[in-house]
Image (cartoon, rainbow, N blue to C red):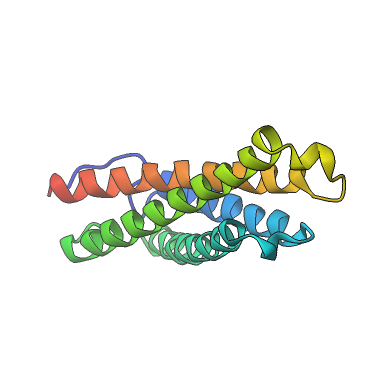
Length: 154
């Protein structure tokens, strides 16, 4: 298999996974600190999706670290196909959650003007958590494309 940036068992793969984890964890922390987020289904879905993303990314980051430390090869077709399925599932779920939360944020801020009418609504936290979710998704989507390319080139 070809060596691509972001492939499993490389430093770029480890940094990609750590970035996914950090942005997903930041999204969870910011959203969970926002008062009243549980009243909105899209924000609860964002928390659940980012939780799954954080777990998946942290697990694969640990696997990358293990492979780097012991100089193991993670490019077997079975492992790469598992990574492809997991990355695509988490990437699609992350994108859907970020888009739904983004839609609610735009509705609150620009369409219904809830943010300007209700100063107790933590719109800034909702926006920041959604931005972190989109950043996590961007890294997750990149990882999914790299894994798909690796699987296709094997």
